[in-house]
Length: 175
Image 1 (cartoon, rainbow, N blue to C red):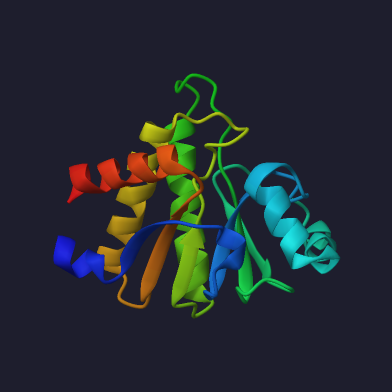
Image 2: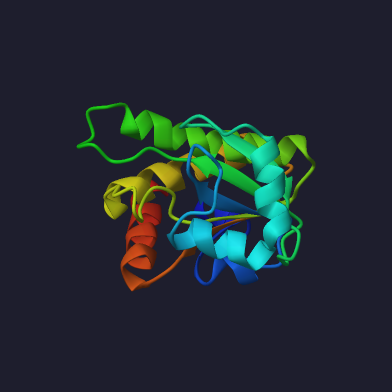
């Protein structure tokens, strides 16, 4: 399995806003407005047109995702995935985090996208423990890639050594 996935799943340490892929995933809030962290960086790099399109979408529930154009980003699209705020783990956080990865991948596939890059959803100001979030992210991507041949490449994009290490460890545990 690792050999198959190595060609289609890559864990990278990078600035997600600089990746020339079909879509990048925004770790969004329920209002789909520019926030802090990766969300703020994506909105700043995409330009004001992104915020204007997001406003028309009427928000997004936790565990789900919506898609917009990428505007000034190298990526053609932005998938806005709303992960859960960490509240100790007993409020459906794992299920909601898994759901936003699945919905993002399904939405990308529905739009015929072949390459997508994810940040560490919910690991910033939403406070999700990185090691737990990494396991969920890697598991959901692997499950999707095993069952869907259309996606050519999924990047799990890590900002910083701690997150990169957690994702590498999660990958090793799961394959």
